[in-house]
Length: 98
Image (cartoon, rainbow, N blue to C red; front, side, top):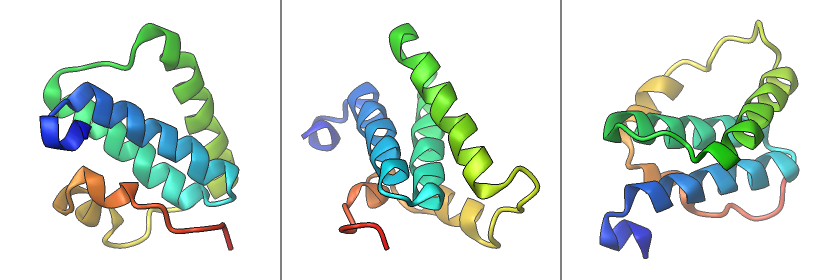
């Protein structure tokens, strides 16, 4: 519904929540993509996460970095794909973690 209403703040909050879900289900790469999409969308709209949510998002980012490995390069094409696809593309639940 937020997408249809073009409510950027709600869309970014949903993306951040989906990032936490992806991480909890054991998919740190998907979590990184979703969290990055939320942050990028916020940045383009000139928004910031609500103060009450900033700590949780920073903690998730640290957990994702640790899970993926700080020295691990981003897969080729990931940055390009995140920029090219609409943010809602990452919102579709993919089922249980593998």
